[in-house]
Image 1: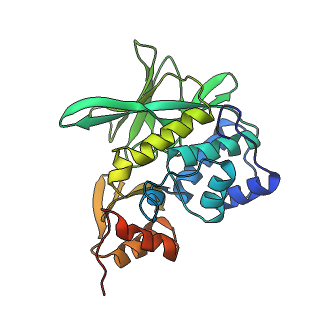
Image 2: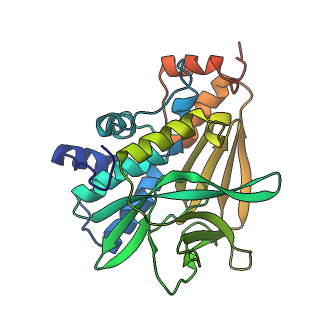
Image 3: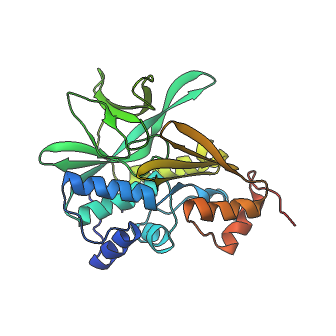
Length: 296
């Protein structure tokens, strides 16, 4: 079940999850604890949509059963997308004593130069800390918030932890909250997504998950992976789109790898994102429009 009443994890699962996040002891249900959990999640568990493409079953809809997500993300050391990542993270937060609700957001996009927003197909988490609401999101993949964001009536640009990136949450005239980002203090703000903070439940996410995994979306059209990494005390974002891997950080956006064969891509996925796919999964992409040729 994934809802405002997310199931708590067992003590054993919490310990295993924190080990996956490279956190030695239980964080307290405070803002500092939440910051640690968010950053470590983004550094240790990749955003990825491999389950949609490295499979013989098409369309492939990822399971949202908590047990299955835990097995995939924690035990198999895979990643996932928002419904999986934020769904399981919500359960961890609740198990650690945080007060949380689950919500949804509409993601900004441009089609042929025209701006727009998706349906409410992004899972977000709202955390209540001492009467103040905070956005927590470890499942966006793009230039989203790396740290908790306050739903404040006096919004301020917030350093995002990656280079000079900044984010900001701002209440709009239509009573939606707009998350914006910019890559440095001199750049224009760009919309990321907006939310009404309406509480959502499992059936809502099941429908969104089905639509994202089967419809004509960026996730069905492309192979995507994103993870954060440390580089000499600074955070960088490592991003893969189909056959190319780029790294963005302080004043740079650099192409670091290109895949020409499926063998190169499988090796690259393990190198850059610490994901080992099974032989069956690797074979599964042969029927996909994204499949690459073999070196043999």
